[in-house]
Image (cartoon, rainbow, N blue to C red; front, side, top):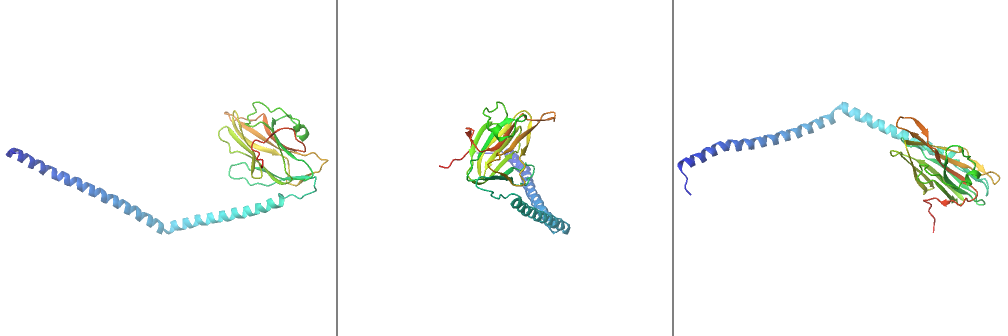
Length: 276
């Protein structure tokens, strides 16, 4: 292949022009790498200087001391509360046919409503049934005898499980816990547990944003129910609704728990666990 003098001169001229450009690009890349390395070294130096700053060290130590103090206060409060639970949450057995109960104090955790917990002693010589039904919020007696007669679950109550449910309690001591929340949009979860076993996992939903408070029997002191005394109503799960205009109203139905000495022929609780 032959080149003319003119072509060779053009190639040489192109090489002469390209060489500084290629060299300049390499220099730019090298300079950029050096700048990045300098940035890393400067940031590392700043961090070291900040760590060595006496004022920063004092602030960090103060924060650590505050957290340690808060943990100590919290642990002390929990120990004191456990003492209160033991003092005011125990049951004394009154006899083979006497049912006894009391509420067990509970701590409120963050924004969640604390559960309502009952300690119940079921006597050996007496049948005791725990029952649940959704009932009108107004105009219904809390007498266990009258509650026992309810047979028709309401329609459109907002509760996913309107009832009616029952379970026979075994003799001995039981912890019955009722918990509501936290709210998810327009849905309010609610649960009933007997010891570590769930009896009912349900929810309320309807128009408005729900919140709740449990209206329950006062049992800070032990309550005793000999055979001649009717077994008690325990608790209503009451739902408060907030509408779009921020007005508030009560839901028309409550979830109701009570004790009885006889069966009403209700269905078992949906989550009742029966030992084989």
